[in-house]
Length: 235
Image (tube, rainbow, N blue to C red; front, side):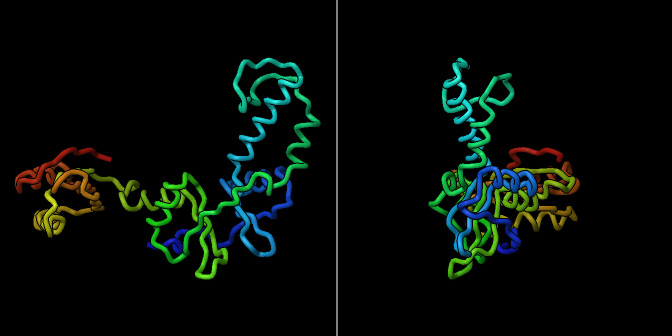
């Protein structure tokens, strides 16, 4: 499974000179978390709704203090749920006259569109980002992949939408262990819906997470063959 099979190809982008208001309209219309910022076809940055709203809250809080409204809240946050007599003109100026390039992330993390999907997941985790531009071998923007796309892959790997019994085993880190487990269930004519293994967490032991049909029978068969069942849950 590769980035190119999961990314969005027809990417909505925005220019660096466009207003924050225009960016928010695009977020609302397309239900995006972030937008690539392009200038002359070149990727210049990423703007996210979270960053805009964080700065907007800080701006509103400062306006409240200027207006003499004591919220007893630390900067930079405020809330639009409070009944406040704020200066609407200045708030409008914030959205309409501040530009995307002022708040966009310029230190861009990208991923090759031919990279495996787990590389994209690792980059998002290490850099605490929710949207990742996908580029080709010469750096051209070819799409974006988001945390939601990664979660959909996670859903497929664990077969979360399929009904079955989730069984977790502690298995010795020996060659062929997984094959032996699947062979035992095959001989018992028990269907395996999904099978996932973890990297070893303890010395010579790793986890095998199975989703199977006939969970109770599968558990008994595995225990009969001396496999240690850590947990069993119907999902």
